[in-house]
Amino acid sequence: KAVGMPLFDQVGKRLYLTQAGEELVKTCRAIFENLDQFEMKIADFKGLKQGRLRLGVITTAKYFVPRLLGPFCHRYPGIDVSLQVTNHEHILNRLSDNLDDLYVLSQLPDHLDITSHRIIENPLVVIAPANHPLAHEKNISLETIGNEPFIMREPGSGTRKAVQELFERNKIPLKVQLDLGSNEAIKQAIAGGLGISILSLHTLALEGTSSQLTILDVEQFPIERYWYAIYPSGKQLSIVARTFLDYLMTEGKELASKNAARTIPGVSQYSLLDTPHQGKAGN
Image (cartoon, rainbow, N blue to C red; front, side):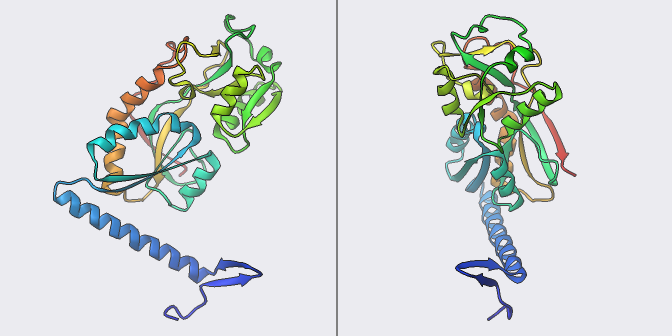
């Protein structure tokens, strides 16, 4: 009644927002965001760090982001954290809807206007069972690897897209034998001898020296990628989000690199600590 226009349409049993309804939702979100900003600024004036931190991260980032949150939350016990973990496609949907403060992913979107901060390297490596016939070979060709059965992440995964692009550039068909929705399931399938895969080095963190997996020495690998913290361009970060971003770019960067180095044998060749970088993408 206050708006004077319908806010939604009913089609069958489903409700759809009208244009006026969508504008009302945007306005309400802006009001709540401004209230959060106000509360956090008052807390900052008092010398406190408290409020809510909303993070959206892609699936592979779950191997290091929670470990970075531990020290941060101990330092700022007044900060509540909401962590959403999903695949690349869903993270971009959340970014478009501005549902979170910061997002951590490894493939920058080229169709969205964002501000990005490079955190650390995220190399993709070829993983096989420890007893694989190629385990001790050097500089294995892509053609040889192309003959192996592959276990891949589901369509929509950033890792899968990067792998497909590499093989397509080299005109080598990829024999995908199995699609799985999680990195842990893929590692178990590899250990069971169902095939090989290409995953982020971070997925091997804490595997230990007794791991049933090994990293193959393959030409054009590792695929060089990076982790980025991003948010929509023009967005004013909350004090809590800015504090966490500063932490990511300093102590968090070093801590993530140390954790990623604790993997299975043969990964000492990869340096995960990168120089600070800030840039914009998707303009």
